[in-house]
Length: 462
Image (cartoon, rainbow, N blue to C red):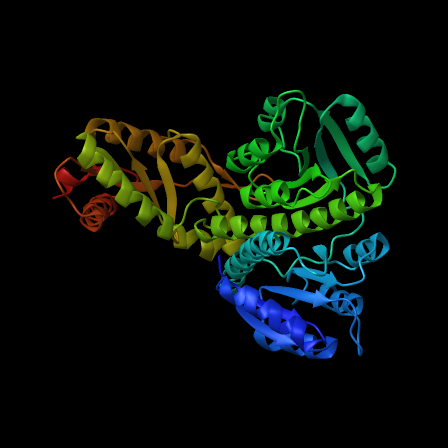
């Protein structure tokens, strides 16, 4: 996996060494020699990850990291801090500033490249979600970049996959003392991989040795391949100094790792960081899903719109040709709807349209497609339906619309509404959907011409 990496170090030799290593692995490398230079390069070049030295003369790495994470435009850019003067205090400080990890010089190549690959995957995921959301916003959907999560947002459901219950209780006690989360303890790999029905946990903390016979790396892989846990975040706990195991875990899909035994404060900071990431990614993912849903729905009635209906009809038509079973198309048009708007106003007309749509949905099968094509015209597509079955369904809808009044907002006032319907049937013989829609439209026109409030089949309309 390639990507653009910004290397920030005030010592030219260090910059050259890192550039040589990363370029040999086919990464695009940008160099900066100071904190201010780094901030300008990030603005201009938009790197996928920043390798940031801690000690620099003008502005140290902690300050640079804080500035990046405080800016909504750069907060999602991963930061990997490096230093020649490593200490646990500095490590915790870097993580608290928003860094994704903290490496010591001379840098272990395995630790460096596994982390870089992992963080670039995360960055690409965020970039894709942001792009889809931006496109949706251009069409009037989507949301602004989610605001920074509050302390309440950092709560969530955490599952501890531990070597044994004793270890799990110790971990849970340390976490609950400082985090607003719910914590479950599991010592069975199968129980973790196949959670009970309901919402999946937000984060899994997985020890490389779970229970007596479990395999933490295998569990990471299983969690990443299950639809219900695919978007959960995973912190892998590996034996102290086992960088090979940590690298394998990251390549299999772990979001982060810590060495065992770990400082409880470090685990808390890493969990907060992962909760922050989960909050933002879930917000963007939900926004994208909502915008996709809205893009194919009619905002007034909640039915599918013309765009979706056209695509769906092509699939129904193809399936009919594969199975040899017919399908029916039904066009419905509310009779004299203009008079409703003229006499009672558009708000009343909107209420009639919503009630009309609801009655159609309530009286069709779950497999039938009900959509609003525009104005007062609606479409019903019925797979595996003969001409006689379509005619019966059309008559049923006509009666449902005619027999009950449409209530107005004003007390004791109501409207009598009728509908004209045109029906055509597609068969296993190849036929274009546009042609079938024209046939249904001709049948609908015949219903209107014959006095409205009736169902006309295309064959008789001709």
